[in-house]
Image (tube, rainbow, N blue to C red; front, side, top):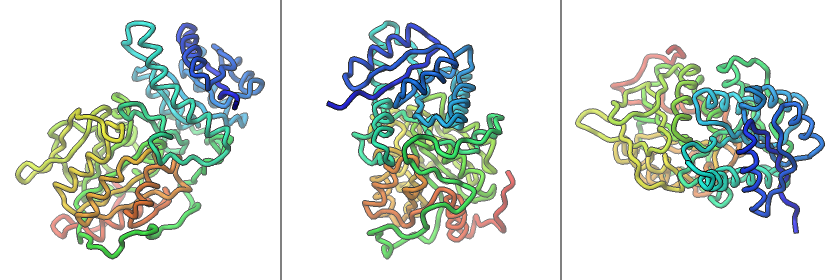
Length: 420
């Protein structure tokens, strides 16, 4: 029998730490090697306890959890870290900063459960699958392939965060300390967005490149999950302020997180980035991010195209789901759509890309080497739906070039600029 995944819990709450440890131990797949309440204890046990995963509360040690994470990474501790913190604006902001410092994932602490059993159920449903996923990945020492839903630590409504460490969010959070060269002790490829890096831009294998393509692009739609916040932070600054078409994004995240993510992306983007609101008019050069726990669609009202939000059943275990957005884009824009599928687990976006391709749309997928988890892009590529496979640092340029060459004459811009 394989030994359990070794987990170190660092939490500001003794009661929640104890309950979390009990839930994990009951799985029979996790060995809790320690529960600590200070950064000093965490640094010490991270070495002596040899954990496969660290569960970290950013409020640890009176709010010094981020300092502890920074010390861990600077000391070359590359153990996967899952942030487990309160659902408050301050903690959410700290969670984004933790991701920029090298945390791999996060789960919001239970709120409003009302009783111990509610906490137990929540931890088992939300936190345990992610601990198992990252623990298995760390022990296997291999790159992460998250192309199947079974491999995904996604919850029942698809709430899953990004988990890479790029410089964009560090600058937004006021931290100029560069991230470590690698995020973990296992081989997830780290992609430098300022240089060429691995991978090439080209047609996908089995791509139906000779099928009809719309001569126009009226909208860009993006699907992204694990690794998404920092992938988007790498892409958005590279899109020109007069791109000429709207951009609509589905990032698998819970409520509140998507609002703060939109605000952060708006700070680093020449385009206006906002969280989607029901019936908002969609205009060129606007970027709309689907709100957590709501599907986002596009709908035509006369001469206007507007956002629609709904809480229909999750698709691909996700709400919001990219497939929902992509299908609606096919109905409204036909083939005049550029779809981009970025890093993430599962297969959300694949069937939506299929519908779009049948209409004559163009599909790009992020290449494996630059993905945090090569799941969603992989299923698109293997289905033969991707026109191009693109490394992360070329995505913005490819979007801008494609839109520029295929924008309708009535909305064409004289030159691409990077001014907001």
